[in-house]
Amino acid sequence: SGRAAGPFVQVNCSALSENLLESELFGHVKGAYTGGAGDRTGRFLEAAGGTIFLDEIGDVSPVVQVKLLRVLQERVIERVGDNKPIPVDVRVVSATNRDLETLLATGRMREDFFYRIKVVSLDIPPLRDRREDIPLLITHLLEKIARREGQPGPPPVSGGALRLLMNHDWPGNVRELENALEHAVVLSRGDAVRSAHLPPELFRSGGRRERGLADVPLHSDQEKDLLRGALRQAGWNRSKAARRLGIDRTTLWRKIKEYGLEPED
Image (cartoon, rainbow, N blue to C red):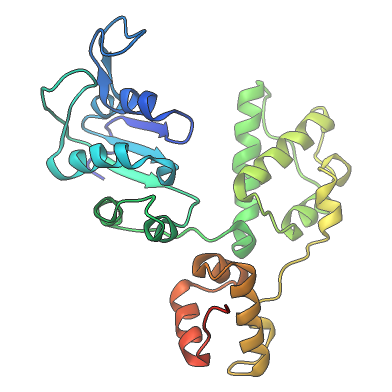
């Protein structure tokens, strides 16, 4: 994009308390709070002309949501302890592993904030539903680990190890994959990564996966029962049920209407 040459600033919104997050994002002036010995430039100003990435946006409190909403709408910030508006030119990208619609329904996310950040949405499927990405991620993550450890290059991966990595369901997604590879690199001591170097849970899983709609006939009693069971196990959280079934939420909604499914009392 036109901002490719600009700064890219990342903030983990779940790692900081409400007060610290506000200071981290917008900065503060000297004496704004106890311990605030000097002025501080916030991440929004650091990202001027580029992009700020707000990770775990679903963990942001309603108070901070209001302040972020002002930034998104008016393109200005105010440092903590100061009432002078400062214009900012920044693109905002956010991510979360939470169901934002559930947070909206329970009042933990403001409706105006929800629709303001939901301009363009990308729904990333769980790793078990995009197994073709696993070899590419293995290569990328091993290169990353090798650079961090000062190794000349990433270790090769044996066929047996690759089969285990491909067959695991990865409930922890890419973070779990990275941890498994770090575990293997430590045990392999610079040699090729083999099956014996991988974490024990990869052997226990045996590549099991939950039964999906592709395993039953369309428009059948088996499909209806599978839908009802997935919705019940997910507490009628449609996003979770859709992920469990390996379909998108629109398809799930259409199937719910087709079979007249309703939450059980």
